[in-house]
Length: 323
Ligand code: AVJ
Image (cartoon, rainbow, N blue to C red; front, side, top):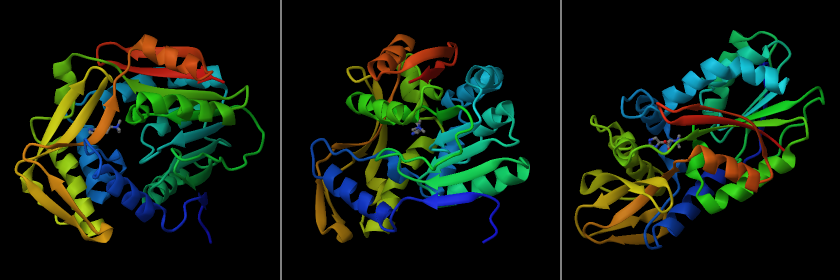
């Protein structure tokens, strides 16, 4: 075929369906009910997330963009990277800042995502925008295991993990995940992580429960996904969206609260799920970090901090580490 970029799919055909069934049957039969945030992102969910990034209550996305605008050049100089691997690349919007700073000509860019559509869309655009870029898209679930395509050994790699997606891992899972990354890094490689910082409780809960109700629609989109993908009969109008700060775990919890006692059938799982009136189902956990805590977690995973850039007004940090 004549694609101007490489593409490797490491996921088996049934990966999505299997992982969805396993997570939902598991998550809705435990107490409290709790499922992975992965399932929000169908076409509608991705669209709603794009809208979230523009909300006044959600400064996270713009703060990271601002930090990259300010420091991409410094990142390029510090790393000297000739390969950029981006975990959870999505639309690759922010990667462009790093790609331009690293010099796209001859640069290896490896976007990694579970969404084939997102990879193809972003890749087609990038090879047009940056003649000379060597792009190899990788469809993979990097939370399970990450095997990078063999790249010519021509210089340091930069692994970028942006958007505070690290915050979707709970504290005990972050250590092993980070150590796993360290294990595939060579001494000359770097890892760049974006992390949302702890703010006032009011700011944090508002970021996940905006006035326009976009985040509520995003949360409830999960119900539409489950209805479609698993033949369930959730009525979105019988759930309320809630945003709660959990100070013990230092994370925001998005929850769907059942307005009434009800029994929901999920046909493809052969499952009937009981909800008590007022029962809350945790649909996403989003950890918030302190600058010190972030550095401690890196140290704990055997990673050394090269630099930390923080926007203390917006409450966001970028941390650059080595193995
Ligand atoms: C993309 C996972 C970092 O946790 O802030 C935004 C997703 N969920 N609003 C986050 C999200 C609800 C976002 N992450």
